[in-house]
Image (cartoon, rainbow, N blue to C red; front, side, top):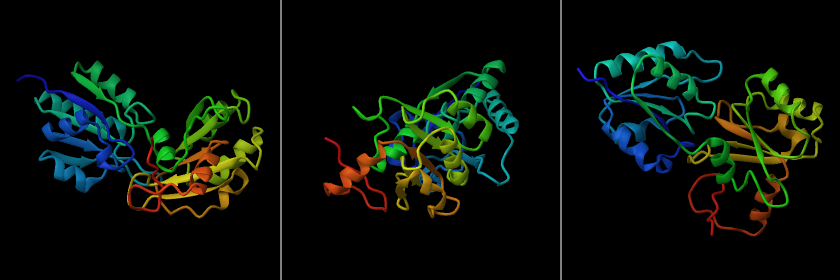
Length: 257
């Protein structure tokens, strides 16, 4: 029997309209789909007849061990099946896609990477916040917020207020993360935002100052990102010009030109 193919596919920030054409094709053609917790399950089941199993990881909840996910992909591929490992955002941006690619390569399994729109860029953009802006921020730094030691190590390598900061998986720890940023020299008055459930009907955005971030009443259990830097003020400027929203929901989606 011929060995199948594993596709490591990025599903973007949530809305299935933001799947790439190749991602949609691989989902439609799949025999088995192992999907993350943040994937729109109803849209997924409408798009495929494949077997679909949730193997996603969420904070403080039981999850499928990574080694088990690797074994499932390898076993199905050896049976000649077309496997899609469907991940929120992009597979190689805090999605363990690199680990899975290495496991597949070591097992001699053919695989491909289908990039997705990373939530680190998409979530702020959908809220009207560009992560870079001429004259304000010429770069941005993406971090995972669930490992305090890694955050401290990264912050020691940059000067405060020189780039935009985007923190994934950090909404639940937002008070601690804000304190760590301020301890590394970021001013409490630095503009900050929390964007939850970006691209979805229940999207929610808060803007304020870094020192106020811990008190922001973000939706409990919502997936989201923290954005810190002067670029957050662009959202305020866009709101001031009354740019009309282009899609329903509590988030602001701006029509670009």
